[in-house]
Amino acid sequence: MRDTLLSALTGCADKSRRPLARRFLVGLSADELQFIAEFLGACLLEPSLECRNSRAELGDRISRFQTLRGGFAPCASEDEQHKMILLLEYLCRSGVRLGGNLPMAD
Image (tube, rainbow, N blue to C red):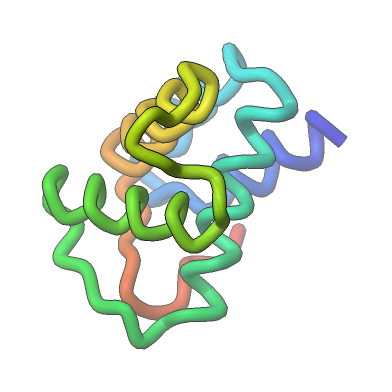
């Protein structure tokens, strides 16, 4: 499952940034990869949520996702906070654009 997630998430990255995204993703656990995949899946199901993809807007969108997911509280666990940071870093490094359909792997 980990290899499948790794390939899928690498494929979502902007073509020119895929090597960088893959290098980043290789160091993550299957649980962390799954969290990123869940976020991207939620974005596909809610394409009406527009996001300009600035770091601040991405952070807000990640916080909303975590709240809707039922896992974020004012005293979120360190694991949840860690996953949210990893997700933000992946989005910034990969060039994934939110607010519509995500690119499909070539």
